[in-house]
Length: 261
Image 1: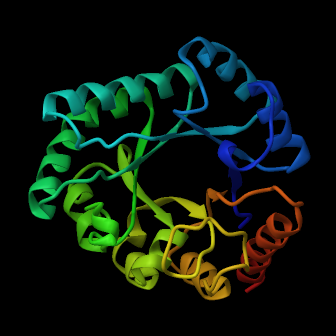
Image 2: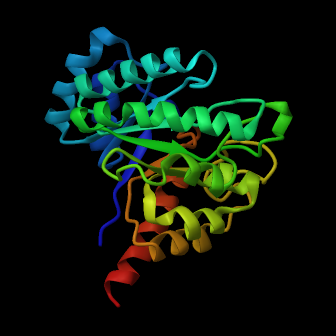
């Protein structure tokens, strides 16, 4: 089983969307390009769709928004607009932070209703919403949802896997010290991952091997749940490719071992 590898456009150098696609496909040899709502404009969507086909890349979109900031009606409208952007670009995965809200239970209930309301739109657009785990709820008073498996399960359980799944950010899980719990409890809905290291306290986006994540352990646990990608690089190319290449080779080696019995 060959793992699928990709990279976030926020973590390598490019000028113009064509170069972003070219570098992902040809320089890195990856299969998926993750774009960000902060890095593309609506007038580029048609070009992006064309480039996706030209370079034969999978495409995802990372949404940078606090989905719980406004009214539920506003949130539904915002989410549907982002889904429509995915549809127009032919991005198949939409990565969403679960939002910030002062009351955890109330915030999760609101988010559940928002996501439920978007299921038909997601299915029609051929887009799967990837709910990303995040910081500890108490971290810097931000009240981020998604720091424990129960948060993610509260929102996605019972919703169709074709529309909603789980994005595991290994760096965030290192901050909450529960990566193994996420894989054990939510691994059956795992459809996307983010790769970045840290020292377990802040979201430093350190390069592979520069923090204290036990990558061999988490990669093997990830393989154990039957997941094979996308694995998306979310640490900087700046300073050279060595860390990216070592990380990717580590993933591929584990999956080669699995395929050989």
